[in-house]
Length: 59
Image (cartoon, rainbow, N blue to C red; front, top):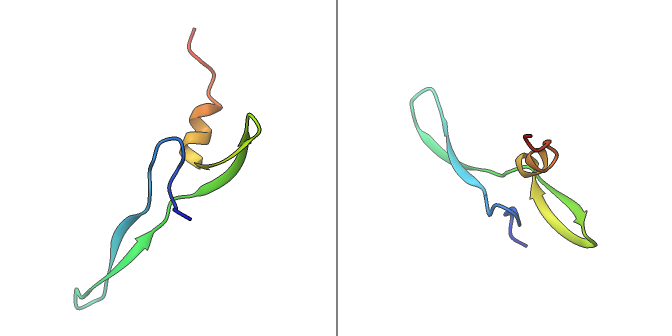
């Protein structure tokens, strides 16, 4: 089960935790995925895509 948005394809990124001595420990930063029903199909969307879909179109 991939942690990617079905609409935009955005996935997780890597970041670094730094200690006081500047040692680097890599960590994974997952995106905020939510499962939604769109047209009777279950899709995984990131919250930024959900916000974009809720916007009113410009006139």
